[in-house]
Image 1 (cartoon, one colour):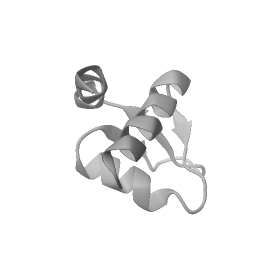
Image 2 (tube, one colour; image 1 turned 135 degrees about the vertical axis):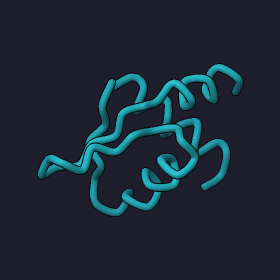
Image 3 (spheres, one colour; image 1 turned 120 degrees about the vertical axis):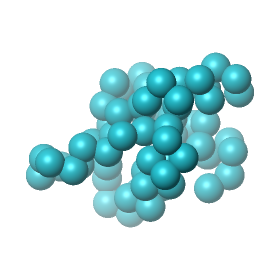
Length: 62
């Protein structure tokens, strides 16, 4: 994912507090999680991602 895409997706997640992971976007969210920018809650039927402090720092620096 390109830097602009990372920023746009993180901004959406931050605005929503928790973002449901829709089909076809799992890889994008998993990439953000691997970077430490989000935490994916896999315990519910519908996975959701929440931004981490590291993700907020990334957005603030961008």
